[in-house]
Length: 440
Ligand SMILES: [Zn+2]
Image (cartoon, rainbow, N blue to C red):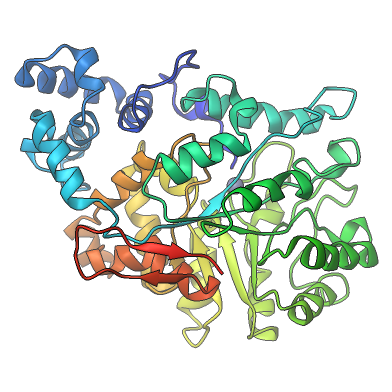
């Protein structure tokens, strides 16, 4: 991901100690947005009602519910299903959170990363100026999200601590960054380093290959893809159509350059091909972040699934049109990493429109949960926010959006991803027992 937090969230600061809880992490993010000052007044009132200091209130289970209640009040729309009891009584909030937890939801985070490599990123030595833009952006994001050392904290160790142990995530799918022209001829995150995540948590992670662009030479690209499968047993691909070569990008529907890649993927048994779409960050060209190249490729490779990461936001309408007008299509997916986090906290109306558009046009079976963590630190506040998020009735009526029911949320949270990644979800009959997941 790839979103300049300090640009969009003016009140957000780099932290040296970091928030005390994921709830506080999410709350501070809401507070840094343009509604921040007004949310802050509500927080003060809620803290007073609870008979607590602001600081202790922010560390309590009520902080995030109080923030969500404030957003409902400020916007005059019910974006969050949250009760005053949760917002004003930390004990009640804790109880509701526990009752709602442990894992009635099977949660697959389809979009996670580590972002560190042993060599580091040294400007002028192994990283170009353009390459540093991206590193800097991720570093800023991490520092704002409770990782005091930015990218240096986006390690294998912290991947486990933040995502697998520190949140309700059942399975994390992790994906690489390439762009080796900008990083001394080596992928920004080399596959041999990220394979460590898979080795450490084999049943709770799924590893994707990446860093492939045919502009580096088609045969080399095909060889690397084969090597990723044979040596590292990757389960799919996550690619970028903008790249750091002189050509600056390529398209999935390029019959000469890209189709041989999909034919090779098919032969290697790779069924799920993801692509960063939307969020045209840093040094990369926005035109390649548009999703229209998924149109032809979806038709020409109906046995492969194509996943638009970030839901192509802010071009989500272009993506949605590829299915809205072609409802017969069964292999086009969207994933909401970074898009949900950035909009839910600062532009809830936009968040509702993005989710509503995707769910209506792509269909409720084709939208997948993702958080882009560990770039966003611990993903738990995003999970809590999605559990409570709703599409206000006016939008459901006026745009024909589906309601965000618990059933739809369960599909988005994990069932859709489980279907295409062959993850086994053993739903327990007792609702208080977590659903266990096994990645295969
Ligand atoms: Zn990402």
